Amino acid sequence: MQGLGELETAVMEVLWLDPSPQRVRDVLDALSTRRKLAYTTVMTVLDNLHRKGWVSRELDGRAYRYLATRSREDSVAHALRELLDSAEDPESVLLRFARSVSPRESEVLRRALGDTAGDQ
Amino acid sequence: MILAFALLVGAVVVGFAAPRFLHRLTTSQVAPAVLITWWFATGVSVLLTALGGVVLLLVPGHGPARWVVDRIHECWSAVTHGSVPALDDVLGTVGTLLIAAALARLGLAVFRRRSDALKVHRRQLSLLRIAARRATGQEPLMWLDHDQPLAYSVAGRPSFVVATTGLTEHLSDQQVAAVLAHERAHLRGRHHVLTGLADAAAWAMPFVPLMRQAPAAVRVLVEMAADSAAAAAHGAEAVHSALLRVTSGAAPAGALGMADNGVEQRLDRLARASRPKPWLRVGALVATAVTAPALPAAVGLGLFAVTSTVFCSIA
Image (cartoon, rainbow over all chains, first blue to last red; front, side, top):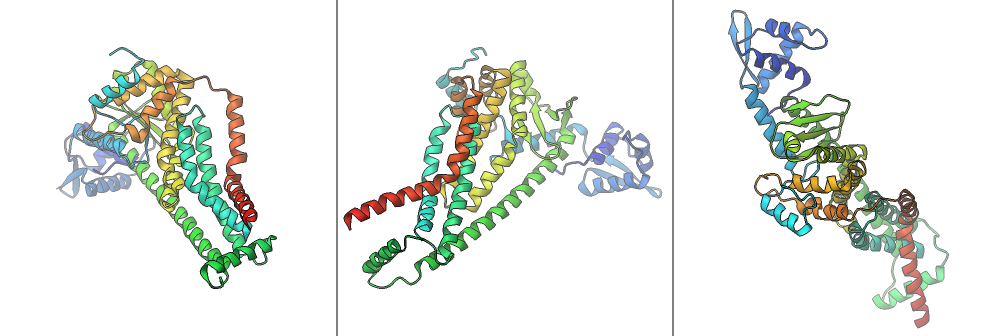
């Protein structure tokens, strides 16, 4: 799964909020970014999103109408899965508090060391 | 020539023998920061001492103890039944090439590691934009909706900590605070840079045990350093119990990392945690700064002194 840049996220938010096919003009009007974006900027962002497979488009007259290819829930679940996998990667450059162990292994560890917390 | 050999021998001996002693210290009460300094100072001094040795070999007219050199040459030729043509030149050239290759590999490894880290940082951010809620406040903290208690830190611009909601469900407030303090300590202490450098050194010089074993050792030590930072703020008890809770999360199959992360050693250290004395720590750091750089040279010269005494008494 390809991740999203700052502007791409903002545009996807708009498409997720209103699932009907939208023109570049509609997206631009609905965008709530700090500075006002140019029409061509939004068009380029939508074009990139289309190339990455995040949106599909259909020709309506002379302009394209865009819509998200998958729901926000689905996208969040996918991104979450990849993030969790990356956190478990032994070769990762991330530093994590502790890698997960199975409940049985942790039980052995807990017994061996004596769980000072006591409860649970 | 004698000095050069003493330096080279010292570098080899320390490069091979030092990890044994450093590993033993990991389970002691010596502060992790001091031990991390030891690993890096020893690594750098082994490299520089070896470099000094080969440079001395190539410098013409070196070495005051000319007659000892002659003795060794005589000795050598007696063994090999022939003359030894410019042994030091050969050794010096080979040594220089080896060290130049090692340094070039080190540079390449650091560069690669850095670009990998940049890629991971960019990818993490691009996924977190979709999946995470950014906590309000000045500390960059990303929350993921997930039941498994988990926390990790990503270095870069900006650096940030990622934590799961499972953390707040399974842990007490104080334990959560301890975990987050632990992750922030990683970022503040530039621990990602330290592990990266250790990885690069191991990749560049895998034939030196000191370099080869550095990544695993430094990984455990930075975890210990972050633990003690968290313990200083929220108590060793909170870190200790949090460590047990986080490791008890429902894990994907095959994800056993106790040995990799030194969880057992960390728990042991936290259980025995005593109040760190600041003056003791400063003293240890100063001692490290003085001792570690001189270690290979001292070992080499010491060995030479002993062997030459023995030789003299025989001859």
